[in-house]
Image 1: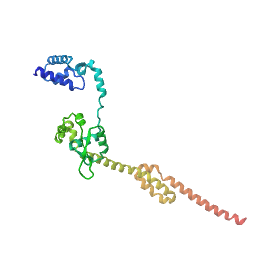
Image 2 (image 1 turned 120 degrees about the vertical axis):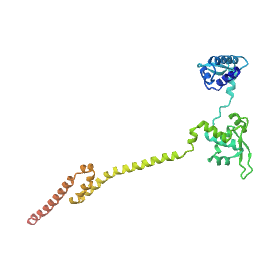
Image 3 (image 1 turned 90 degrees about the vertical axis):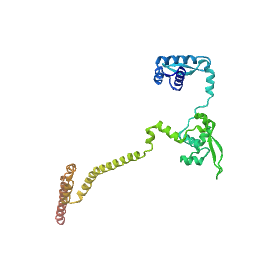
Image 4 (image 1 turned 180 degrees about the vertical axis):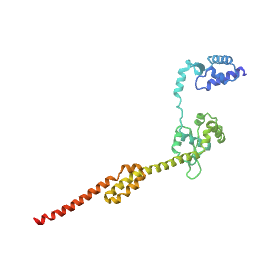
Length: 287
């Protein structure tokens, strides 16, 4: 069981870090082994302590929970101060990457930053200079004398650091990333899944192409046979139905009767033409 001072301090810290109002049940759940009535009593004592004039904040009940807030009598002065504050600094992913490189390699030149990131970083450096998170630190004594960049005091204030020495090491950063990301951290280092996933669609595309090819071939063959039928003799057209007999649908749609009907008509026309050319020979000499 915790003593009274530590219990009150823990209750105060829980209410402070909570982004939303904390209920009494939520506080009791965190403080395992503590009785509800005892926690409620210490919460009331803490609320009474902050009601004194010596404190600029108070604990209020909001939506069946408890939350820190400023006092009503101080709102006018606090409102003026809030309006004078600078807007929150928002950084893009390229800006954070560049800022991290400068923070761990400072002072660093633009060519060194671009070599690490692998992309052009001139525009990002300009943005960081405008936000006063990075400042120039002279020039490097090499060919071309490139400008050196380092982090500024606003960088320490923005990230809540006493100095650059409080930055986590790369090993500590990896451990924090593993704890925060968990399985996602391990999944990022397995590119083989992506290659396997892309191989499957390629195989499906190949089978689809093979399936489409037989569908188009029977449709293309009958027109060729129809064009050749009027040009060839009836004897030459007889093998064509036998060749298409393998597909039942094609043999039914193209019966062999039409080509046989057209050929006798053509033959009749030729015979009639021969008769007509023979008969006029008799009247002409008679005339």
